[in-house]
Image (cartoon, rainbow, N blue to C red; front, side, top):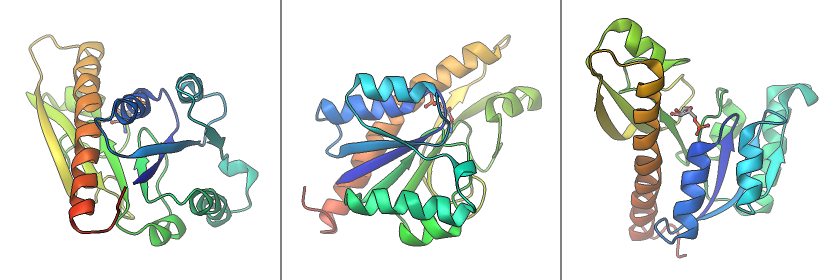
Amino acid sequence: MKMAIFASGRGSNAEAIIEASKAGLLEAEVSFIICDKPGAKVNERALKKEIPVYECVPRNFDSKQQYEEQIIRHLREAEIDFIVLAGYMRLVGPTLLKAFEGKIVNIHPSLLPSFPGLDAIGQALDAGVKVTGVTIHYVDEGMDTGPIIAQKAIRIENGETRQSLTRKIQAVEHQLYPQTLQMICEQKRMEGEYHG
Ligand code: GRF
């Protein structure tokens, strides 16, 4: 299975997935990263791991449709089977959704359907909940609304800070995302969709 990772920022999940793939823990190849923010940290991280980065910046296109069509050309050229969103700070539009129907997954730092959208960690702290977590889900047209694939709960301790909770969430994400992607690969292989 050939994957492309979409990322806008730090890229710590992208790095964890690339490492799992290189270590053979994830039987899929990360072909390249699509990054919509020039200069984002993910660029540096990917290049260190010798994974190419395509910068596709929406403001350089007349419409979201044209932006996504350009991305689809890259994906088709490289025969990408699956799209992994990892801190991609933008809603996927109908053009890309239709081209890769059922083949786009996302990770979100809360137990969805609680706390969708921006700053899920801050939302959980503000709400005073005692448990939050991480969700991996298929992507649909909504904001963090697609079918849930995997979740892991994380306890919020008394005196928990944004920094400490972020650290805990990220540690879980870096395990759960590669493991879940591997599970998807195995499933697809059993269904006979991919042979690699
Ligand atoms: C992660 O917390 C992920 O759940 C959310 O955005 C963050 C990306 O972090 N969608 P990183 O760029 O992978 O470090």
